[in-house]
Amino acid sequence: MKTLIVLGFFLMVSSVFAQDSVIFGDMRPDAPALAARGDYGVGVRTMTLTHSDQVDILKATDSTTAPRYDRPLTIEVWYPAVIPADATPLVTYQETLGRVDVPSSPLIPFTFSGRALHDADIDLSAAPYPLIVVSHGFPGSRFMMTYLTENLASKGYVVVSIDHTESTFSDVAGFASTLLNRPLDIRFVIDQMAEMSAKDSKSFLAGALDANNTGLVGYSMGGYGALNVAGGGYGAAYIPTLTQFGLAGVNLLEVNLAGNAAYSPDKRVKAVYTFAPWGMNFDLWDKDSLATLTVPVFFVAGSQDDVAGYEKGARRLFDLATNSDRYLLTFDDARHNVAPNPPPPDAKTYDDYMRYADSVWDSERMNNINQHFATAFFGEYLKAEDTAAYLDLIEVAADGVYSAEADGSLKADHTYWLGFQNRSAVGLRLEHHASGE
Image 1 (tube, rainbow, N blue to C red):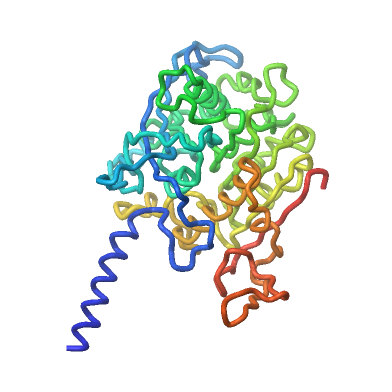
Image 2 (cartoon, helix red, strand yellow; image 1 turned 90 degrees about the horizontal axis):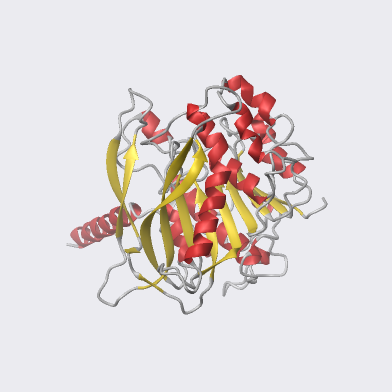
C-alpha cells in the first residue's frame, strides 16, 4: 500500500509538472528571486498597424531608388490587467514552425499556452506604466519571448512585441528589408503607442503608458535595431561591409548611419536589454558611431555564439560603448539562442528544435535568469526601484561564497549572487562598466 501511495504521488506530481512545463516562463525550483511573476494580472491583445509610404527596398533596382509601400505590422500587447474572479488567465498563442523561404522546412502551425487573459480590461491603478518594445530575431515572431513579455507586464509595464514584416517565419524575404526596417519599425511602434496612450485617445491604452519612458528588448537582429534606435548609429564600414551581401539598393540603408542628417537617437528610449545583438561581428559599428549611445544597456550573450559572435560581437560592443552605463551577462559555453522560449514539443526536426534550444544550457533555466536580470535592470533604470543590488555582483558567479546562518539570514562574508539560491549561480559572469569607462 505504501508503495502505491508513493507511486500515486509521483504520478500526480509528474502530471502537474508536465502541464506546467509547457507554460513558458514559469519558475523552476532553482530560479533566481526576481524571476517570480509580479503583482499584476496580465492581459494581452493583438493589433495591426500600418506604416504608410515606406521604402520598398526589396523592389529596388539600383543603389539609390525604390518604390514605396504601406508596410503592415502585427503587434502583440501585454499589459497590467484586471482579471475577473471567474476567469482563468490562460491564453493560447498561434505560432509557426519552419520557414517559408526553405522548401525543406515547411510551415507547420502549432499552439502553446501562456499565463494571460485575452482582451482583459487594463488596470489603470498605477498608470502610466513604462513602455517596453520587443524586437525578435531573423527570422522570428512576436511570440518568441512570451516568458519575458508576460513576466514584465505582471510587474507594471506595457510590453509590445512586433512581428517585423518580411522577417517572420511565415513571410521572411530579402535580408535588405530587415537591415533597413528594424530600427524604423521600432521607432514607428513607439510613435503609435504614444498616440494610443494620449488621454483623449479612443484606444484601450488611453492614459496607460508613458512612451517617454521606453525600454527596448532586442534579440539578434532585434538587438541590431534596438541599439540603433537608442543611439548606436551604424559606422563608416556599414555600407561597404554590406555590399558583400549583394543587396540591391544598399545605399538606401544610409538613413540609419551615424552622422546622417536623417539619423538621431530616439530620446524616448531610456534603457536597452539586448540578447546576442547581430552586427558588430561585421564591423557595423565603431567607437565613434557608438558615441551617441548614452542610455544604459544590458548585453546578454553566450560565450560560444556562432551567429552574432561573442568576442567580436556582444563583448566588443560592450567594450566600445564607453558613453553608456552597461552590463554584460555571459552564459558560459552557450551559443546564440540565449533569448527564446524553450523549444515547443512540436519541434520534431533538428532545425526547428535548434531555432530555440541551446546545446549546453537548459532553456527554461536561461529564461528564469533573463526574467531576473531584466526585472532588476528595468526596475533600476525605468522605474527607479531599489534593484541595484541585484546588478552589483562579484564578476564570476562561481567565485561567490554562500554564507548563511541556520535561520537563512546572510552573514557578513556572503558574496554569492543576490537572489540566487546556494549552488545555483554557476556558468555565469556579469561585468559592469559605468559611463566613461
